[in-house]
Image 1 (cartoon, rainbow, N blue to C red):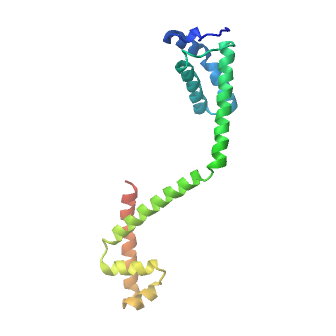
Image 2: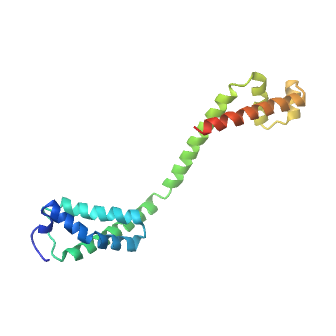
Image 3: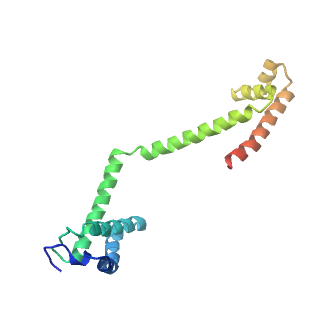
Length: 173
């Protein structure tokens, strides 16, 4: 089908649908054979036929329609690989930065919840736990606050049990 005027197979929706039905598998096969990615190959087929439809009034095909579509598929694959190369060369840190940002957000959220929950504890328990977080031993805390080591153990155990129960509820939301 060689022509120098707009392609007549694209003039109405029914004719276009027939072209699509007849040729989409071949276009998909070309895309998939190079990519081995089902979703990307399907998107490419849609893009190619959408482009045909959008340019139907002005498109001039000087080869067979089949040859034109295979060539369009190959060009789409090349474009995909070119875009991937550009992205990997110029934006290599985006996924890492995104992961780091997500981890930072999660950390900040967890830290806020921890502080809020610690605020619900009695002053002595909060004070003991704070010193423990600073790396002091039970003996050092007991000496500093004038408590027995058993009392320090009690406060630490109490706070840890409370946090374990409450953080579990907060994180499951």
